[in-house]
Length: 366
Image 1 (tube, rainbow, N blue to C red):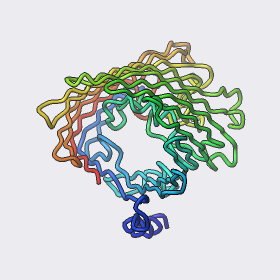
Image 2 (image 1 turned 90 degrees about the vertical axis):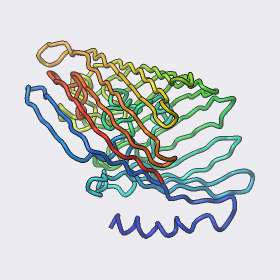
Image 3 (image 1 turned 135 degrees about the vertical axis):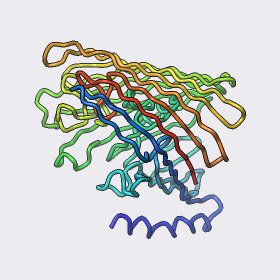
C-alpha cells in the first residue's frame, strides 16, 4: 500500500511548478551503495564478521519531495516528504512509515522566518549537524553525539528565524515524540538551538529535553542533551570541534536498548541518573582539486557505574576516509573506521570490545 501511494504521487511531482513561476515541486534523492567488511568483538569476547554490500555508507539512501508555493505578501507555503530505504534490498528503513525522515508543511517569509508542522528533524539535529565533517554510516558525528544523529520526531512544531547577519535561531516542540508507539502515552520534547555562520566561521549551540513522566518507567528521569561546537574553513583544511553532554539517557530516544527499557535511552545505568560527555575533532583536507581526505575522532566519557560496581570506561570512534568527486552529483569514497569500547548498535555496553570497518562505495544524488 505504501509503495503504491508513493508511486502514485511521483507524476504529480514531476509536473509541478508549471502553475506559477514562484512555485516549485522537486523530486530528489540519494542512492549510496558500497561494499564493506565489519569485524566486532562483543562484550562476551565473541567475535563476529560481516562482509557484503552496505547501503548509506557516506550518506543515507533516500527519496523525497519538496516544494513551495508563492503566496501574497512575501509569504510562501513549504513542504517536505522524505523516506529512507535500504539500497541493498529496496525495502523501507521503517516499514511502518511511508515517510520516516520528514512529513511536514509550513509557512515561510524572508522577514519572519519559517514555521513547520509535522514529522521532522529536531532543531538540535538540524543546526548541530552542521558541525559534522565525516558522515560515515554508524561512525559519523551522530554515533557519539546522538542529538545530532539523523533522527526525526512525530507531532512536531519547529520555528526557524531568518538570518540576522549570519545568526539563526531555532525553537521546537513535539507533543509526543513517539507518536502512537507507546499506546497513546504522551512524551513531549523541547529542542532549541542557535547557529552563527559568517564566511569560513560556523558556531552552533543546541539543547534538547524529553519528558518521561508518562513513559511507564518507574523512577525515570528526563533525558537532556547539550551541544556546543565550532568549525572554520582555512581553505587548506576545514577543522571542526564540538562538545556534548547527554544526561539521563539519550534525549532523542534514538539510542540502543541493551537494558531492554523499550525507549532507546541507552543502558539503564545511563538512563537512571548517569551522564556522558562527548568530544569531537574533525578535519577535511582538499586534495588535487576533486578529492577530500576526511578524518574524524570522537571520545565519550561516561559518568556512572555498572550494576556490579565497575566504573564505566571511556570509548572512542575514529575514522579516516577519502571522497573523490566524479561530477557535481557523483562521488566515490573509501574509509576505515575503529570503535573502541563502543558499540555501533547499543553505544556504551559493559565489556564492549573493538569494532573495525572497511568500506568503499558510490554516492549519487539527483
